[in-house]
Amino acid sequence: MTAVESFIDYKANTGMQCGNYSIDLPELKPGQQYRFHFDATKCIGCHCCEVACNEQNNNPAEVKWRRVGEVEGGEFPNVLQMFLSMSCNHCIEPACLIGCPTNAYIKLENGIVIHDDPACIGCQYCTWNCPYDVPVFHKERHIVTKCHMCYERIEEGQSPACVQACPEGAIEIEVVDVEEWINEKMQKEGSAPFLIDPKYTKSTTRFTLPKEMPKELHPADEALIKPAHNEWPLVVMTVLTQVSFIGFVALFLGDLAAKFTELPEPSPAMAIVTFLLSAIGLPLSALHLGRPIKAMSAMKNLKTSWLSREAAALGAFTGLMTIVALLYILNIDGLLRLFLEAITAAIGAYGIYAQSMIYRVPAKPTWNRVTTTYRFFSTGYIGTLILAFIAIIQGQSNVANILLAISILLGSLQLYLFFESQRFYDKPNEEFGYVIKKAKKLLENEFKKLYDFRKISLPLGAILFPLLAIIALNAGSLGFAFGFALLGVILAFASEFVGRLLFYSTALKTGMPGNFFAGSMR
Image (cartoon, rainbow, N blue to C red; front, side, top):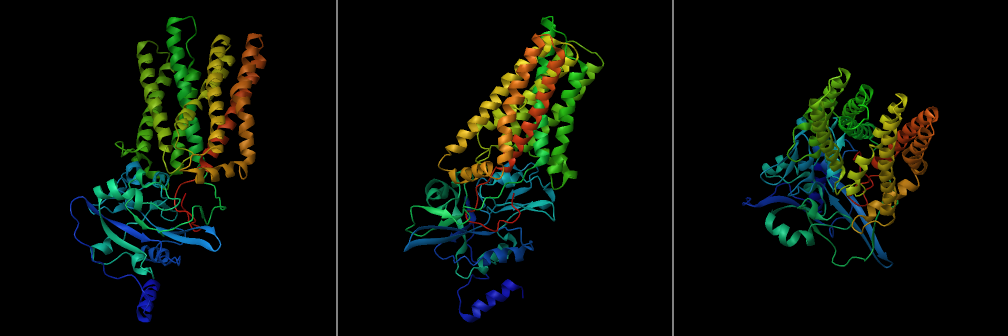
């Protein structure tokens, strides 16, 4: 016998209540699926369900498909301590499935959502998408794994391990009528304190809660704030591709302007630099994957995954920039180059937009804002600043002035968005206030030095040094202009890398409240 089976046998011999080995589920009718029911009035917080799940699925201690959380509230003597047990909610519209770039998630006819391990590349995008923090990265296997409701056991007429192991019968498997659930019961019975509104994924888990609960409840881990993963490969990749895109747009507009004005054509050096930024940055994203060798399969799900769309669009953008750079090197001019530049710029714009949409997910409230898209595009101010620096080296003061002015304009937008984010943290919306307040504490405490550096470096690199470079150019001092532009590029890059690091590290997720043992979930 396994430890769980021995425990269940002991409960049976001593008369303790326990879950059944067998399960008698009615045959599913059209429009129905299986779901979990959790009764919080019965749960005693013993964590037997967690242990049983890990043992059944041979998972290490840090990989938890089912977790137990704790909330508390009230004033003595009328206090409440309530436990919540949750695994996958086998949603009607699973965010993990919709967002997965490799189609590694499958929703069976019975409604159970399973994970196709061989198809997974370990990108962990599903861990960002799921607002219940369900998928978990398995470091030893380099892939994401999740609860599958022990579907093989259900097919054999046995209940899932968590259902069997619960000494109080707090976890059950039920049949749910999908349409009735969505239209009538989901909002009343589909959520629990501090869980995200079920409307986002149409979660199917039914919760039974105490009839009278205190007005104010607090997660037991309220004071425990752990930073999210820093995602260094993505920090560098996103910044470089965004800088490359805006730099390329400036290159295209400069080439177009040269046809109708006396401005000189952009130089081959400008084309090469904008290409190299993306060519260096884009492959770095593979270092984020659990299985980097399978990176190319990230483009499988163009139909619903923003990650697939980003990979395809930015890959095409970088490839087309290679051709454009060659045309500049070979001094091939004309309408063909302009046409190719226009196509490349359009694809790049879609790529950066898709890149921003990867992060606009309800599970990450600090990301899920339209300002994320604006921020990603305006980060490219460094691209025009770099081209201005090259123009100064080449003695093209008039071109440098124009590029510096554009850089200041985009940099001012980036600065505005930075201050706007501060207001966002100060006045979080009610639905996600719990998570946003934790993120603010991270910024103001653990990451205070980096946050302060961002506050100082952004206006200097994005506005002050480019402005001083313009003043120096108009005064005829190319040496000072060169120095100010160089300082601007260096400080702007440092500021954006720090800002993007904070973007990832403070992006806390919605999920199970009061869960001290979340393991390796990121």
